[in-house]
Length: 228
Image (cartoon, rainbow, N blue to C red):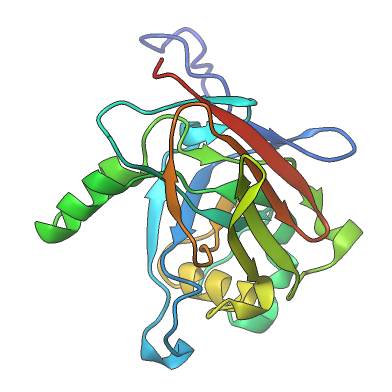
């Protein structure tokens, strides 16, 4: 392959990565998110649906600035799956073999922009894929914790619990999510999947301290700071 190091118009962006418990970093390729995965309807009613965020929406710091262009920033705590193998059109029973590990994440949403997009039958991109919209904690390897199918998932604001659920309540469990997504795109190492959020989503304001917990997975915490 030809050396392209001098052919770029500008320097390529630095790789996006998430720290791994025990050391190392997980390079992020793409971010997929599942919508309405704890909703009160049966699994058979429809297949899971997905939206995306750019990989540089990943937010690792303890401070996250309130985003521009919204007056209604909402939190959605989620189990995140990290994949380290490629696959296409697989069955659910093959899905766990693709999983490197798990993390706690939050799908931050500009709810007013999402509601407007829904009312006008437009895409959600600018409601979901903005800067710092994908906070995530350290990834723990599946070899350490297995593949969780139950366990508490919570989000608290200023020590008051706002979201509380259990992974057992996922409408589409992790293997079903991966299998469904693999029929839409070819999955690749570095892909992250945010798996949906339980009830209790609501607003965040500047100064709020957010703490997120899923049993057996390193916690996530951050504070909302003024718009950068």
